[in-house]
Image (cartoon, rainbow, N blue to C red; front, top):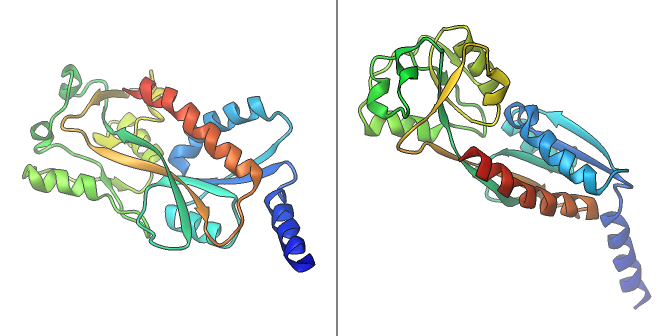
Length: 229
């Protein structure tokens, strides 16, 4: 009986083991604005918590989480079938990003046929992240595009559009960073949707703070989701 109580106390100590700190991993696109916004809301309620925000690719984030480098990560939804606890955060409609002077910028909504023969930025697949929705869209609508430029990061994608090199279908989280910098965004229909998820390691006991962050993030994201619509 004493041994059981000892194990229970040890498990409880582990749950509290962050001692007022969290290490959060995030993809660069989410780390630019969304994740700091969620952190801000959490710190408003927990002002003495120390938080480290580290960025990496999806695959490296998942590896780091498995190795206990992070308490949790925020990333694109991926299909890892074991070793992780996932908590869906938000489903987001991506937008069409255009140089201000582009003819399509005069339209209120961009459709697949508008992309025909356009120089559309190609998003490069990485380990753990493939852009299936983009590929399915072009195939389903038989869209022929020019792919002179490619990148694996949405932030660099916004920059390439700002430079007048191409148009792109990108996440909307960071669009406001490019206001007044030769970039406009338009809704894209039919919806090009991607899910973003918080992940925890199933092999490590979650701390009390990480659980509280999850609750806070899911509450805050509802307001962000409404603002993106």
